Length: 330
Image (cartoon, rainbow, N blue to C red):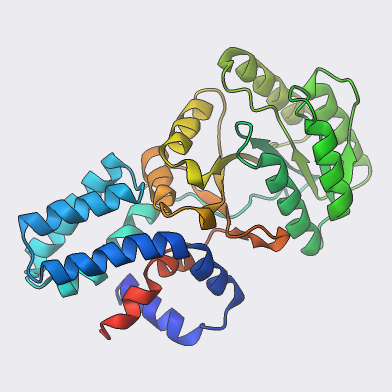
């Protein structure tokens, strides 16, 4: 069974699934832009041709899938067309969906689930430039994990940005979780250290650590993150279990540049994409996975606290193609 067929079966059976519905609504802008162009392309060209492939390539690039990823994708599409002797473009939707799925899952077997510690607190280091919604994302993660029955502690480790500590403290109160703050502290590692001691002594399940986003000074940021890693690794075996990069999906290719820059200063285990519902270029999910071999761990599909969802590849691709998959009846 192809992934396309599996996807159609999924929607036949799970139309009332809450998470699937969130993906459908959250990816509406991308779907309206991407799928509508694909549909028009299929009307313009009923037969496979070089002109069809040229325009398909432009559509994929405009969805922020990334140049290199698109080139690889197009090579695979053309190979499938040749091997399967596909002539009519109406049969290409299935091939396109299948290959988008393959692009994400091929390569290293990276999990898109949060890695939890079996012993002691799970330490999650949150990184990202200022303005991407990192503090709000920390609050949303805390809200979700608390509702999953976990005891959550926050560490106000962004001692650089004015107002960062106060902002996180306000969110902690709203969510109803504890927070470790050192007013006037300039060394974020000292905040992290105190938070770890509290997390261990008071049996917290999760420690979410905020960090400064001053990417413009890579040397200082690298030293700061290296020190945090040393402190965390010394105090909690196997920690940090996650170092998650927060990227604003609406920034498109700038988001890819941020991923590349942060990969130069620390070891990233996954990406959280905020504001995926606010962009028509949701292809950034595939670009990040293909170019940097980083799994997407969570995605923002709305403004509410509960709208930060664990990434689900089936729901993501279904959210891109739900309208298209239903209209040709295949």
